[in-house]
Length: 220
Image 1 (tube, one colour):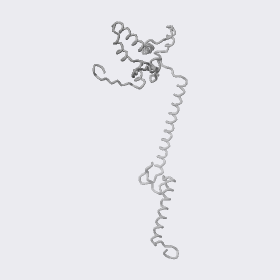
Image 2 (cartoon, rainbow, N blue to C red; image 1 turned 120 degrees about the vertical axis):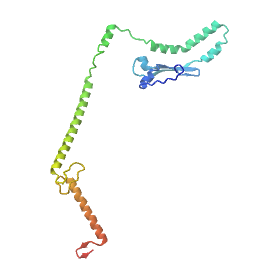
Image 3 (spheres, one colour; image 1 turned 180 degrees about the vertical axis):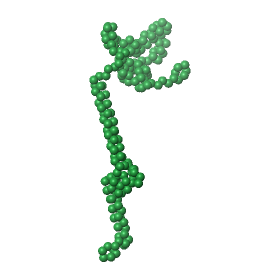
Image 4 (cartoon, one colour; image 1 turned 45 degrees about the horizontal axis):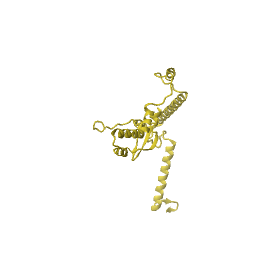
């Protein structure tokens, strides 16, 4: 909520969403836990991982009620503040780990050396170059194979047109050559012959069944 208005934030990904919560403090009755985001703490990409410190004792509600029994105001405030400070001490400790991380001292010259390549093009590694070359080789082989296939189809198309003696020369998958057309493939010629043979056999069987088939010695 911002100014009484509900605001909805959308993260680019889950990692970004978890990064928005460097410390999570689940509070239950008389206890609390502390979850510290590992990615934020260690400066890594482990934003979905948390260090867990669970089941810490607390009872601020009871503390406030019991402190009312102390009649001296100064004493009451001193006791309440000290016990509250002890209660939240683990939270402050984890907060300080993120806000003021312990870093090893480093010399400026070392830092210049570490970041010497900034602002310059990233040079691919030998492994990345090999992977890219292999991918390019596969792409070339695919293109060459497609070109060979297309050339073979074109040559077959031209051959079929030259051989075709139909009234309307045709070629391709949907071509319907006449039975005597030289362009008719052997496979298609055999298929048509088989179809005619089967049709003739079926006709003979129907004639036999109807008693209309002439055989040696008379009608059978």
